[in-house]
Length: 123
View (spheres, rainbow, N blue to C red):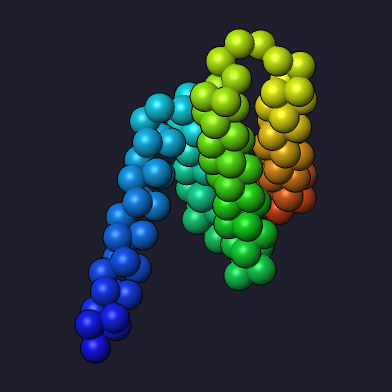
């Protein structure tokens, strides 16, 4: 029984740490705030245009993909800065690859948004 209680406490704590990570991300990361603004605009436009359930799935999926990519990019950058405070060509490659993941997710989100929103806005 004690192990079960401890397990529940650990699970609650893990949520606390995760929400703290989100808070830190939005407070400390400029790109995170930019993506948050874009997500709010996309969600607002989705409500305004009364998109379908499957379109909501697409919009929310790409919003999540961009956030996940940007959060991982930020975490990798911070870790890389601790591991190698001075410039290192291999650390630069790691940072560039993480940034590329964000770029791919952002391009996907723009494409999905265009596919869903453009026909509704111009018809």
